[in-house]
View 1 (tube, rainbow, N blue to C red):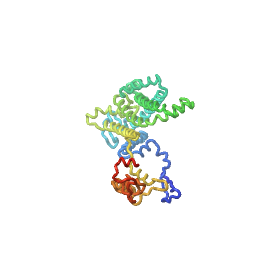
View 2 (view 1 turned 90 degrees about the vertical axis):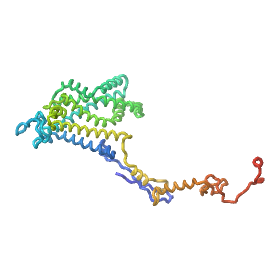
View 3 (view 1 turned 30 degrees about the vertical axis):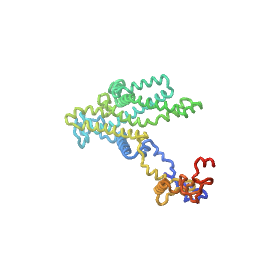
View 4 (view 1 turned 120 degrees about the horizontal axis):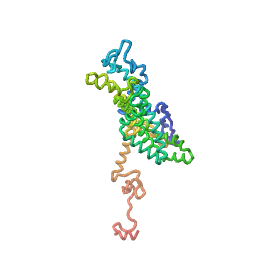
Length: 418
């Protein structure tokens, strides 16, 4: 919403009509939401990438939330009222995407697998944020030997291969196989160990930078407790980049979960549906010409990871001023030209517009640079108007000669007389 403010002309100047200056009002609350704000800020290809990522991610969330309604069968169901499904059945009216080697419905396994992936993402990212942000806040604010120790440990974990570390943690936590919630927690905690160093390093770097600001020093001088400074002043200004890391880590969590399931360290098929496990069981089907058992779980992984990655990369570009695309400057320059105000009234360009003013100024400068041309605004050395800008132009009054001595007197005699 844009309001208008009238700027009156100066008193006694006889200027033109008052100027109308547009004034921006308050932006609606929903336009300031994280993703909505970036969507309104993006343009061109950047907006296309963000919209495509949001659409794919939205479909993934809806599928995961409505899995009990959308799935025609259960994730571990092997038969219907008409009898068993049958193994490796091609797509048909009864089974739109066919059946797996174990006799499960492929479409149902894909839909229920979205729910499993979403639960693992939520648990893993929430646990990573809580642990990583708290450790980074305490380490960066207090420093000392604890800070150095945590930095060394997190660097060592960060340098370790993420999938291998997740496999190790899955074996330690659940022995490689478990029930639905046990498998989800085991996979989520395995991914959490991989993500904690990222949140720790980002938060610690921001805390180290912010704790030296003037407002933090002022809070210390006023006697504010450390806990209030940490959570009220430092933490609130240290989490600006966390939404970007969350979106990028969500796609990585899906890949890690699929890797665990593909290698046989995921969730049991009777406990929950998991895309990586279905891909593992479909490897032998590909060589036999049975393409539907591997195509659709793999396609689901690719699309979800692509959608979340597009959202994360677009938000990253919009957060970086060097990579952020801006709207055309013609609109802004037009607004400035229409709302320019000078003392005594508005700046009017006349029928020719601003180009006429600029053209007139350039022509006057060119005429002023012509040597020997009189300047009506210049004053000569004798104090009379009409000289050139250098003061040596022709005088308008009668010529006057020397007062003393002949005109051809030597220079030294002239100096003596003066």
